[in-house]
Every structure is written in C-alpha cells, then in structure tokens.
Length: 238
Image (cartoon, rainbow, N blue to C red; front, top):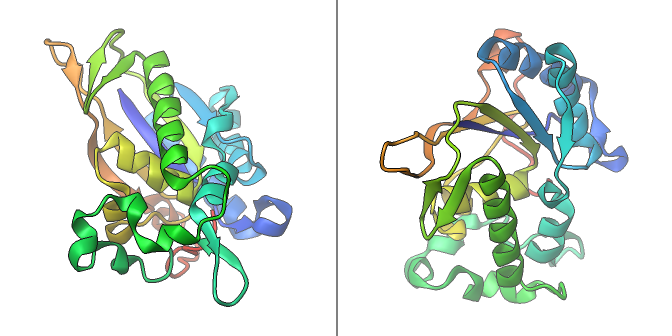
C-alpha cells in the first residue's frame, strides 16, 4: 500500500479556503495523482484541505471521505502557546532547533520547556496519545494493525491512499508513522504547501511491515505546471 500524506495548497486562513495560487496547486496535484492513480481519498474537514482534495476527487470520480481526527484545530489547540508578542503560535515553532539542543535531545519531548507554555486542557502528551490511537484505528481500517513500532498485515492491499491534511497535523502524524520522536521531526523536517509525502507499506510474507518514506514534501507538480514557487512554508500556520 502507498499512503500519500498531502498538505493543503496555499491557504486563505481567514476564510479557510485556498488562494488563487492554492487553487492552481490543487489542480496541479489532481493531474499528478491521476497519472499516479489513487484508489481512495481522505481529508481533514477544514475547508482548505477539502478544497485541495476536491479537484483530485472530481478528475478521478472519487468520494472525498472526511476524517475529523485529521483536522488542524485540535493539534493547534494542544501544541500552541501565547508568544511574547501576545499572539498564539506553535510552541515548537520559531527556534525549533532548540528542541534538539544539548540535553533536550535526550529528554522526553513533552518535558521540554517550550511546552510548559501550552495552556490547553488537553496536554501535548495527552493529545499525542489521542492522535496515535486515531492513526492506529485509521491504519487498521486500511488493513494494517499497529503492534508496537510495526504493523501486522491483516488485510494486505496494493491501494494508493491519499490523505489531505495540514502542516501541524501532518508533521505529528508522520512522526508517529515513521517512529521518529516528534521534536526531532519538527526540528529536522518540514512540509511545503501542496507537498506530497509518500509512505510505502510492503506486504511481506511474514505479515509484518512498517512504513518507509519514499519521498518527503515533494512539489514536482508545482515545477511541472510552472507555478510560482513560494519561499519556505509558513511554519506558524496549519
């Protein structure tokens, strides 16, 4: 099975939709995914994710299946904090390298001082555990049951699954899928608007598998369609 983790296109956050460039990115994605072939499409319920998924569903005559747990809202509420300027942003944003500086690398990530400023009723660790369970339930529906750090293949398939989601959610989810501590993932990796990350779960004869990252945050469709290549991702938004 191939799992495509796709961040939404360039957003208009105020209206929870896509900008004109974001809409062009979504169309470019649809062309790319039609060429690759996609069997099922899942999406966060937020408008910017659904708008990114819609052209793919239309061009391939597929249903966009909404997954509430993929929403960015709960992630942001649990992993954000009021900054010195009075605005609420990702607790792990900005100087993310501080998460792996010195002794921080060996700490339990949720004990890092940056997360002490989070004021949600649901702690960062509680949220992460919730997200892990939701991910495991989703993967089991696809035929792969989590057992520790690997998956038992209970219903092997060769499907290509597209999941349209967000920056914060995507980085948290990928850290779990790939067994990378989240603070290391946040400090070392990033995902661009409309980028495609492809994970492969090979159907081994012993019925044990684990996701392998075939590519991370690929935006070749943007180059192919000669769309404007914006600078780095807006790290502080979803």
